[in-house]
Image 1 (tube, rainbow, N blue to C red):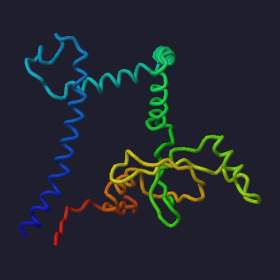
Image 2: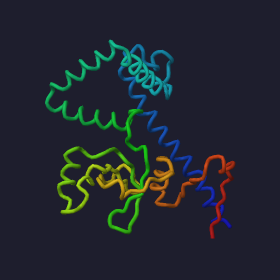
Image 3: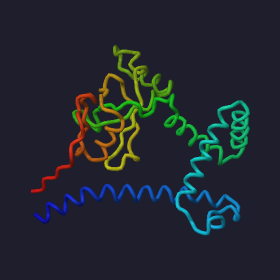
Length: 226
């Protein structure tokens, strides 16, 4: 009986503790932006004490104002001038261009990265895993694949390909980049968030793919430990 109650308590407090720890780490990191302010503008000088979270609010405000200014003509010109300046610095331009391409692909509302969860056979036929479509392979890749097709095969097979990121579990930040034919993939109805939870939990948290109207209200947590 004691073991059952103890495990049930852990199931409640562990997610809460990890969530609070992550929030504290994020807020503490964002509070470092206060070091950019003059000493007389520091919260310690104005309020007489350190107030956690002010740096996070300042960071969010700077990001919002930057996005607001970058949407007008003058802001776009300034962004272009800044990017041209960075492109003239040998090492910086390589790092900046790579990070910008990835961020534009992942964060842009118009991007297609991580918009679909796919079921693919990996690492061998008959073994299935979940991947995320990140786009389509480059023209040269599709052309080379089409040229590598055996005689008599469909010459346009290389054009119907998709780029897929297959994350590892329980750490989805590492994984494998695959390029395969679209017909060899199965598009899933589950959302990207549900697929990520399924991967991180190593299949323990099964996604609910029923329509939202049929899911009903959330049920209370039940833990049965034998």
